[in-house]
Image 1 (cartoon, one colour):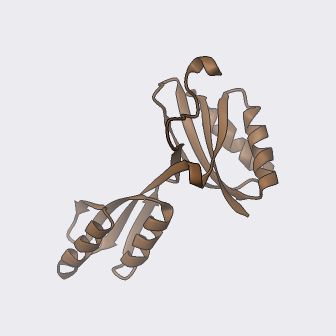
Image 2: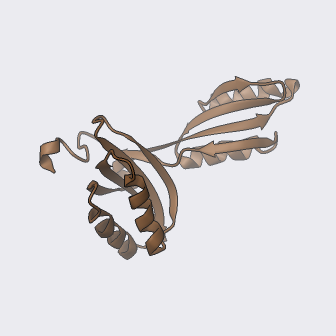
Length: 169
């Protein structure tokens, strides 16, 4: 099994995400991560999906997704030609005597403390999934109370966007 990341441009309309996810569900494909947001054009959303499957299966997924009415374009983003990031919020137990130690690790990982409570710190970290996982592993010794992750999102490197103008569709 290989990690495959799809960037799917769709019409920004109600029910589109449900139709795309429904296709994955009906075919028995498991979505590892999913992120969705509007693009630079308010009429278009980008769905970034990570699936773990073989090369033949990803080709079949792409062909099936492309057939959906609201789908504008589907592109597989390859790790050597893409920029990928994820966001995580991690709530950690933090006794007063541990806070400076945790803060120094937050600085090393270029993360941010975004909430301070009497018994916890909430940390925001962005980066590659491996960076987030490494930071999470460090925080386990303090006691992780909660974690939420956005899922992977990405773009092609360089000057080549997935689409140049709406006329190209």
